[in-house]
Amino acid sequence: MRIHKVYTRTGDQGLTGLLGGKRVPKESLRVEGYGTVDELQAQLGMLRVALKESQEKRSLCTDLVGLIHTVQNDLFDLGSALATPPEHLDRVRHPITEDRIRLLEEHMDRWSADLSPLPSFVLSGGGSYSTLAQVARTVCRRAERGVWRLSREEEVPAEILKYLNRLSDFLFVMGRYLALIFDEEEPLWEMPLKGQ
Image (cartoon, rainbow, N blue to C red):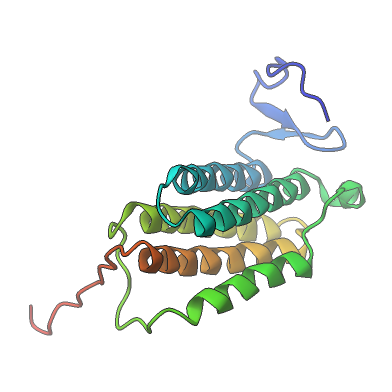
């Protein structure tokens, strides 16, 4: 794939092209879905840069940077499938598979073994690394909701929905793991006492 020109002048009327040539409104559920997935990919780029530039835990940061890069690639593949109408899904070159979902689960299991159980919900803001992961998690949840809305109207491969669900869990656990390894605080939601 080569991108020679960024602007095409074909979207000035509020329509955009899907794989196969179909034109749809830019605010359609399909475009909203893959647009939010792209936002998530960019958000993960911020975490990747922070880890890449960190002077602490270099070996671990290098591993995490590679893992995040893999997830960003997955998100581009996932977005490509979402930009493809159901009748052209056989053209998707790199579909999301159970193997990619399993990779997320394996990392979550490994990290969770080092984490203590939570007595309450985690609030963001205990440290920069964990917060970047938690912000990405919330964008992932929004992407998942949008793709579920699309799936109520058009066919969406089940693996896409499963991947987004597992990815939000993965980012939550990653946020907690980053808080642990970088000795960041993990502020918890304080439930108000009855009658307050």
